[in-house]
Image (cartoon, rainbow, N blue to C red; front, side, top):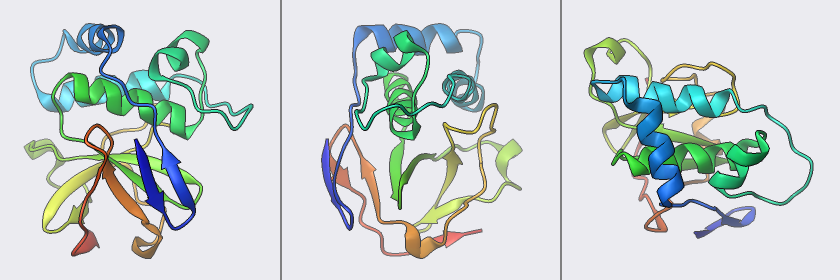
Length: 165
């Protein structure tokens, strides 16, 4: 995926590989609902140590193999596993960072704040915060959100209205 941003071109390394599909299914086989599945994948990604040694991005498979990654690497891994399970998910690009948003319909999340995009509620997944939960707080101003993109289709989400509530 190549996406134009205000800081230049962002390139992601998402994958639909058999290895990533198998990993996603094995991590979630104990789950009976979407909330459990998404949290299980988030737990896996957040427990990979955060480390940045180069400016090179790694594939989801390489991030698992080397057992470390930065926000790009861990977000690519997480969104690839979410995609393998058929979950709607988007990258959100802000200055010098990337996170993921997902829509989840579950009453247990009703009181959690979310990022509302064009009237639809999404929950933040922060791959760099160890043991973080679905619905991570937004640590940026709404104006800092540069691009929201579906990386498998390489499509920017048209943003008409953004709210944090």
